Amino acid sequence: MTESPVKIFRCFVPAMVALVFILGAAAVAADKPEVPEINGMVGSCSANFTVTDTEKKPIYNAKIEVVIRYGFGGLHKSELQIGTNSEGKARVIGLPEKVKKPLEFRISSGPLSKTVLVNPTEKCDASVEVVLGAK
Image (cartoon, rainbow, N blue to C red):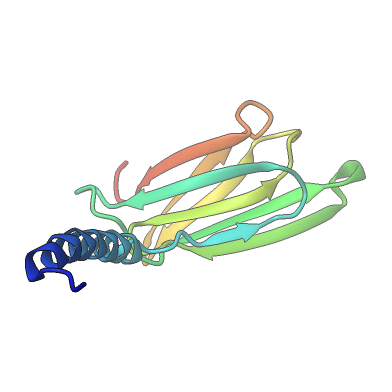
C-alpha cells in the first residue's frame, strides 16, 4: 500500500521547518567571535575584560598586559599579554587567589592607555569594563 502525497507532505514539512530552525540557530552561534583567553597558571581566579572607546564601541586588538609575581617573596614572575576580539573582549584565567597587592593590568590601543587594578583576593572572578580615551 502506498502513502498518499498529502500524508507524505504533512510529514515532510515539519521536518524541513525543524531543519531550517536548527541551521539558523547554528549560523547565529557561529557569528559570535570566540573570546581570546590566556592562562597565568598560578591559581583559579580570572578577569574578564571588555574594552570600549568613549562612544561605547568595542576596541579590536586592545592590548592587555599584566605581570604576576608569585611564590615565596614574589621571586617568580609571569608576564602575560593578550589582545581583545572584535567585541572588545578578552579573558585572563589562572590568576592567584591571594595577592599582597592588587594586580595592575595595563590596557592600551594606539596612543591610548589605562591601568586597572584587579584584586583576586577580594573578587576571584572579576568583570572589568575599560573605557579608553576617558579621563
